[in-house]
Image 1 (cartoon, rainbow, N blue to C red):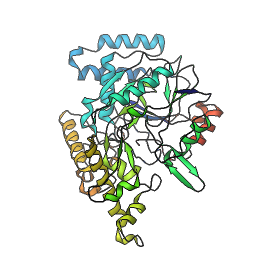
Image 2: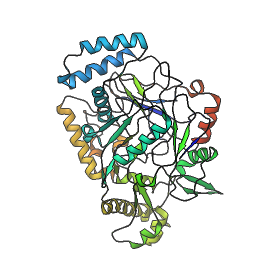
Image 3: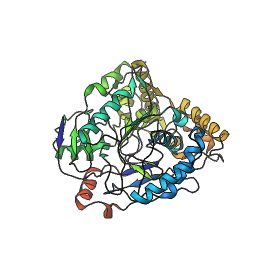
Length: 442
């Protein structure tokens, strides 16, 4: 069901020169709005951008850098000279160029490989790329977003997937998806309390003003908001059958089921700009699978989210009168046990932070053998619980880690005061007031 309205998208943007990637790719749960502006090399960068009215001319140096990378890593494509001449000619004439299907796939995978705040990059070669650049209208884009959610999970098995829509060009913007993720829970302010996810208070208020009724519950699915070029943005309700939700239970505490907690299975980031060789794909939803701490330690545990630790501690009979009893830590561990147990019981892909930390070290070693440096933001790679018990905690000074930025990469911030009309700024203030850090994973 679609509803149409007038407006301009009030969200933050992230470009990843190579592809859309989650902040943490086993994803979700960064502090509200914590997706960073950071960069990586090889013609691929992450930028914090306000939505542009149209793209600038492609930076030819970035385009050439990516073409050389593609041919170097795909010898079967032959030498790059002929393709370089073609790209130069197109950029000179049109201000942009068109990626081949193979370039698009490789660029998306390289972006995930280089995402400095993602711990799950070992699987970058398995990324499935759905090329939907020919899709134009909002209805068709929404249909493809639903198809993305449907195809990303099969009998509980989640496959990393990105759906790429038409890019921005100098003469026209690309389509945009306003939602932070394809699947998100609403948040409602009721007096001095919040029902649902406080992270999404602003966005919930925005879509309600635009005609969405909402159910007033703790886990109401927000509608998709899609804006196609030349069309007013439209609202779309997600079909229930494509949103796989996992109710939480505990292997020892039967009472945990009584709390009515649940979370969706597929974290599909939808507010990142996929940038490959200087071309920005403004709409390119991307999913991996969850690491348990992203749900248990962050989405359900954070005081600015569902804040369930006091509830769980009380049901466990813990002494919450003193911090020295470590009641938060004890409750946090059991909440994370519940998440892993419940996903496993439901047969849905999930990983734990110890396993994923070891796999990241495998990725680091593998990239070193290939002669590639690994961009890694230590503060994001280290899990939010039991950090010092994981191998990544002890690699902060590893010479193989390039830090947040790799040499030769760039960063720039577009001033929203200049790039958006006043109406968009008002929506930005109303819709993102609850998100003080840039939107990221979950």
